[in-house]
Amino acid sequence: MPATVFRETTTPPAVEASRRRRTSPWRRRLAPYAFVLPFVLVFLAFGVYPLFFTLRLSFTDWHGSGAAQWVGFGNYRYLLTNGAFWSSLGNSGVLWLLVVPVQLVLSVVVAVLLGAIKRMRGFYRVAFVVPFVTPLVAVAQIWVVLFDQNYGPVNAVLRALGLPPVGWLVTSGWAKPTLALLFIWKTTGFVVLIILSGLQQIDGGLYEAASLDGAGRVRQLWSITVPLLRRSVMFSVVLQTLAVFQMFTEPYVVTKGGPYNSTTTAGLYLYNHITRADLGTGAANSFLLVIVVMAVSLLFVRLLRAED
Image (tube, rainbow, N blue to C red; front, side, top):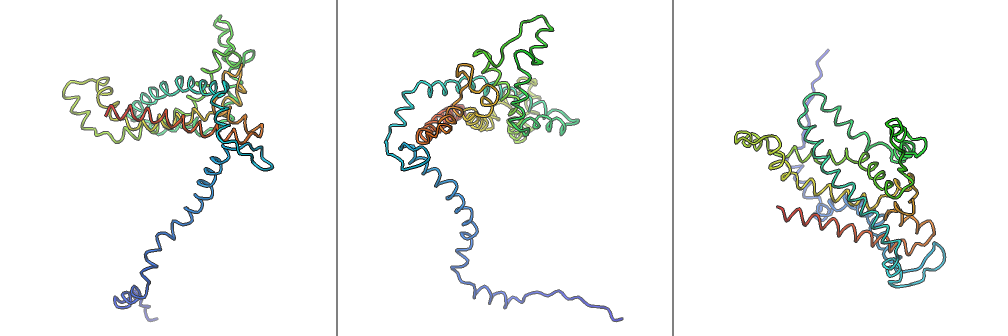
């Protein structure tokens, strides 16, 4: 049988040039915009429109049905003169102090240790990320069982050591640290990943030069690692500030905002407006919360940039 000959077909340059001439220049200019148009439409529909609708809603008295009554800045005046609103911000602020500084120090130490480990590095990295990907409601339910005043394993250990049991979830003094411990355990793995990405950007030659100058491990950590991780730390602070002030599931499942509203966070207080169908006040609360979070985040960004 005669052998089949396969010939590579190519478009002649003249034909290709003719095709380009027939293509409208307007079509070539509009092609990039046509590709991004679906995203722009979705963003306008589910991002921009809800934002402006909520902003308008914050100036009205509306309960989900009927016509919205315009009240101007009435909702904002009510919140700014309401002690419960400031108490919720104060609770979130205390949780921020209990979570973010401890978490940053712990994350830097863990990231440095993970960077130095040579064997089973992947296993340890996955182990630290597992709590972050575990469903939050399941973790919160485990926390309820662990820290139960009467039957919890934590108090059982204290009794075995001859110590009195602690009302972890039913006393104002211990409820916040217990929630902070839950948040730290759940989200530290994510912060460790951010710090690890920052560590990988540091030039190893800096450590070699410092070692030749006689700098030890601690000195290298303080003089090289920490300063060059400032941007990663800045990013982590902003993310964790937003997460702490939005904290809802943890107090809702673990403490229901108690005892005596000591764990009613800003996120949980906002949810209470929704359950009462007070949507106008809830919208105003959400915008005030955004302003507070932006102010705190910009403050720390400014401080870290000042160090640069």
